Length: 279
Image (cartoon, rainbow, N blue to C red; front, side, top):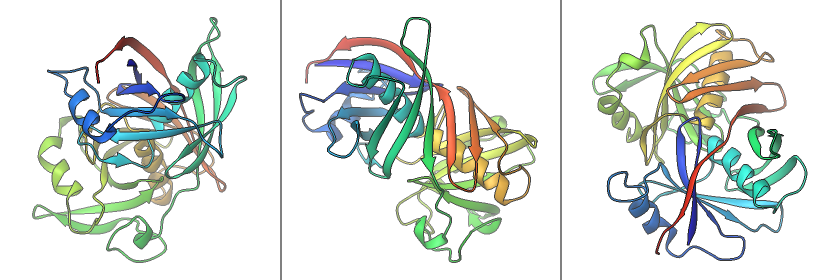
């Protein structure tokens, strides 16, 4: 079966066109194909599927085989695939996900292919129990959480999947993320596990971030995580709502706009290569 290796600023997945042919055992395939030494390699697999309520549907499976609800970088690349394969005409489409229908605006390059996209990610979920977490209240902002014997101040945001944002004085690029990341992911405060963003304020319009994704580990970028970081920065009063915020990740930059109505994310979508794999 043909696959498409794509990435959104380094957050790379293996994509399959399932509009006419379904993918067998996607959870098992995600584990097998994501191996970077013995297979194609990636942060998981994403399937372009037909939908009864939108232009297309996205299914995503993390590298550990668990099915995810939403991926911001992934939905941009999926939208590029749907457009460039001719399933969608024009420069706007809707994508059905497990966290709702997302509307995407496409930006074309000089060859008529999608180079980047803007995603309406919807309003953030802020209520503690709805993240889900053991925290209560309409918002969880700067709340104390003890992880591996150390207290952190955390802000919780769900963008269709759960995020725990930690603001730091030091550079997150110098921290031992592989040591602390799993401790957050599997903390008892998060019954469905958690994605964790470690963020440093550069200025009121610029954040630097590293991310530990549940089911995958560290990735070069996380679209929903960048959205969560920008929302958290506004909730903590260190960035301004209604103004675009650049979030710099290891793989590149995303532009996030948090308004009273929604969160908007703009970033690249890149096809790296295609091939065939025997299933």
